[in-house]
Image (cartoon, rainbow, N blue to C red; front, side, top):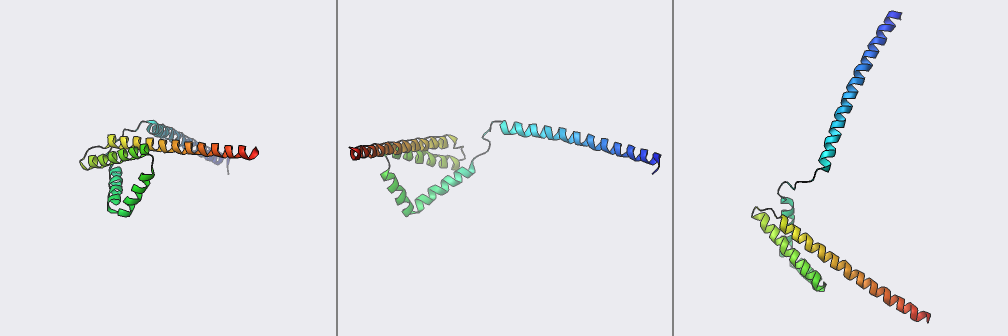
Length: 153
């Protein structure tokens, strides 16, 4: 290779390297813009957009299954019969709210308030159940400690 050819090759390689570097810089800028947009979308509060047809369908399906299956209905009633009266009340109110949500959905209304009410009642029922289980556990611990004390004496 002659010095002129080497010089031309080096110039061509330098130009190619400069072009590639420039294109990579543009791509990095575009990636930064896209990253910022995705981050903005991820941090933006949800608007609660469309109608929750899936929730309505699941609630309606569950309700229909419960009504059409007598064995399942009996099992649910049996479990409810064993529940604390406060929990039972919460579950009954949650069931009524779910029925209202299904009715709202079938009427073409947004069932947000009914579903929110049902969620609150289920949460309170869960809290009461956990509290009752904790109380029962505390009672069992006290009984066990008393028996240990009796054995030591």
